[in-house]
Image 1 (cartoon, helix red, strand yellow):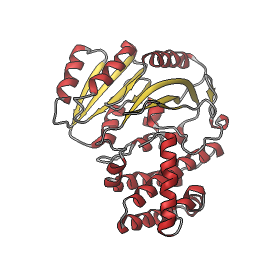
Image 2 (cartoon, rainbow, N blue to C red):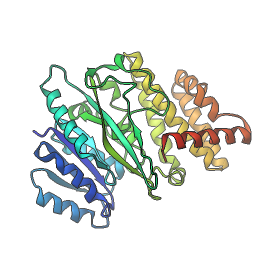
Image 3 (tube, helix red, strand yellow):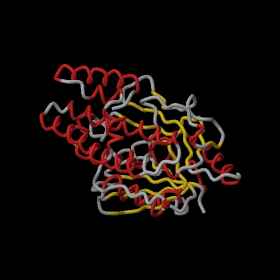
Image 4 (cartoon, rainbow, N blue to C red):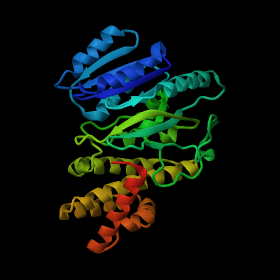
Length: 338
């Protein structure tokens, strides 16, 4: 059995996928690389097959009809044979030294007395044109180099949360929580980082800058203009996260607080994109999102609507919306996103 399965969702990725795959080959025979060709129309399938032929014991090419990023991740989970599972997008890559350290750490953990459900590491925003790279690290909020539970998690400030890029899950846990990401929907990486959380008992944080998250292409899903164009998909993910929170029977206060904070951030992002759309339709959809949350869970609605972000997102009038957008731009510069 392989130590780690890594799924690479690919859609028309011929121009950059090789850099991603080459960075992952460093893991050698301990790693299974699943290149998922999601109905590409360029040379992606050909490149995937060539790699699978060259490295038959390491790489597997999976071809499917186009189902979107979520369905490509689903295919990776279904086909994974490794003890642990990671997603690396085809335009991203990993750091060699950090990668080797992660593999050694996973080896030690599987021999240890406790089953670790999630391994966390840092990621770097490889923002196009930026001289200084923003690192998302957690050393002041999580215990380092030890197995810990949710009670040991410190306060995570707004803007500091676990993304898909930070996370390696135990593969069986993803099966246990019946993770199934929606098809033809962008922004499902938030569901990947959110849905399994109530099933996670033991965590481990390795303070290394492992994942290199490329950001800056105009066609990227996180580009602001693209997000506004695809706002209905962002709202769909937002509502699914509301459902997950509402249906969860929390037994740990720290976990509940973290999941509430994460949902607060996603709801704020939805609100800012709807405001930035500059349309009456956008403002109406913002109202509808709040109404959906209220209809599902009144306690959750009060927390989101009357918290700091909720109050800012609902400042009255054009002046209030302008102030909210200004605050968002400051956060955007500070955290380096979009």
